[in-house]
Image 1 (cartoon, rainbow, N blue to C red):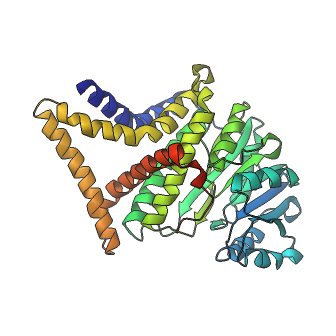
Image 2 (cartoon, rainbow, N blue to C red):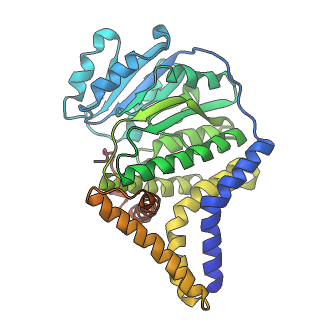
Image 3 (tube, rainbow, N blue to C red):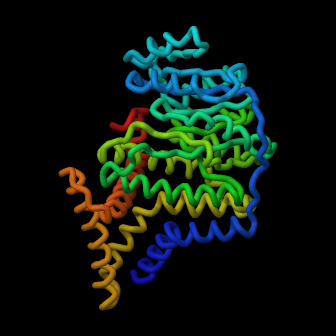
Length: 376
């Protein structure tokens, strides 16, 4: 039991602290920034939508205001069986060149993308959420990285609007700053692992159909481009702002779904752990596999702490009680509208891992219930 404790503890420390340091060192020693040049290829901006009447008008207006050559930009909204006013709102922009593609029923985002992407005209396909807002120069800056012929996917910076408005928001903002740092290092070393669905682009020729059961399309699409020998890189100067901040419960549901998708991806992409894949194998194991297994490792640490000799057992249990107690206190403060800043990191860390554990169980036992829906 003692050996399990130290193994699980070591893997957790490596996943959350050791790996970011390691990938930073490797990126500085072996990394290479992709070529960067001002280019303006033909672009199809694809906005998937499902019952987005609250956001879609602002999203379309934002797309029309982008500082990208209009004759090189195709704006398409793909409505996946929306039953609200989404379709009518988009149709009102038809005179300005905005196209609406309608799925008669809700077939799921993966199946919808598989049908729509081949119909787009652009050399580059840009995916962007209906609830996000792109900075004026974002598209122009994203395209610069495609000047490198080895780059097949480019991801922009995902920023949360008003992320410090509550404890959960503060924790999510801190989490994204941490993730941005890791993505920057992975990008320089070789490739990022997946993209932010709010804003990323691919070479259309590299798109491969998705299984209708695919959960995290914004992870699978870039990873399959990497499989083809291309790079997926990060461009933090191309900014997308998320306007819609979910509640604690909504955030939990969103991360639970992502966690189920992580399990699905690991099962489908296990071959990327082959050491012959080089840096991709290292980053996939360290950033994706270990993070997905983290809640199981945390349970192992908690249980095996009871078998440690004193005083180590007492110390280990005290530290874990402090972590989980702080997270619970943070949740209670969140529910009552109070803000105690130092409680936000443990709250978001534990929320994320609890959602990851729920996602693991959902993937194993309730796969058919994982439909595409907006976090509340």
